[in-house]
Length: 179
Image 1: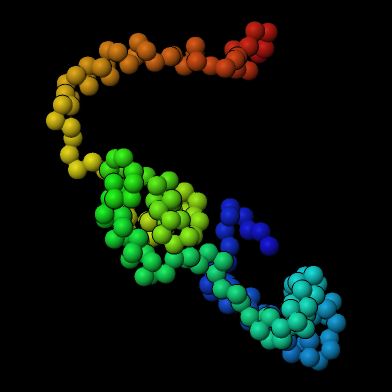
Image 2: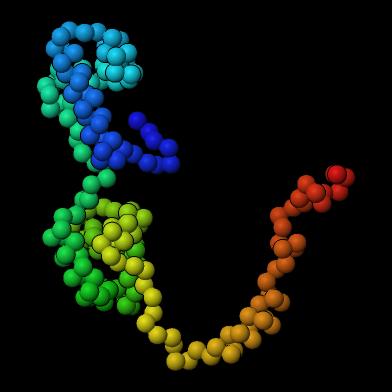
C-alpha cells in the first residue's frame, strides 16, 4: 500500500489495522466468505484474501503487525560506538582533512557495522541523535569584513547576470506577437 507524500501508518494506526485483521480471524474460523467480511469491516476483498492467505500459512501470527518498516538499523550500542568514532575525527579514519561530511559518515557506518544507509538516511540518523550540521567555531583570522562588503556591493552586481539576460527564452508576456 502506498501513502501520499511518502507517509505511512503511525504506531496507533498500525495497531488499529492489526485489530481489524484480528477481527477477521473469528470470521475465517466461522467460514465466512471474503466478500461478506470485506463488506462488514469496510475493507477491500483483496485485503481480506491476503489476510486469509497469511492466516492459512502462519495462523494468528500471520495477522499480527510486523512493526514499523522504518525501525532503526543500528542498536543503541552501535550508535554509542559511532559517536565515539566520530569524536576521534576524520583523520583517524583515513581522510585527509578534519571535515565530517554525510558521505564520509555513511562510509564510516558501512565500514564499522556493514550496514548501508543513504546520505539522507545518514542525516536523519544523526539528527535523531542530537547531531547538527557542522559550523565553524570562529571566523578565519584573515577575513576582512570590510572587503567582503565592498565586493558584495561593487563587484557582485557587475559579474552577476541580470535576470533578463539569464532567461532561457521568451516568457509568454514578452514573446513577439503574443498578447
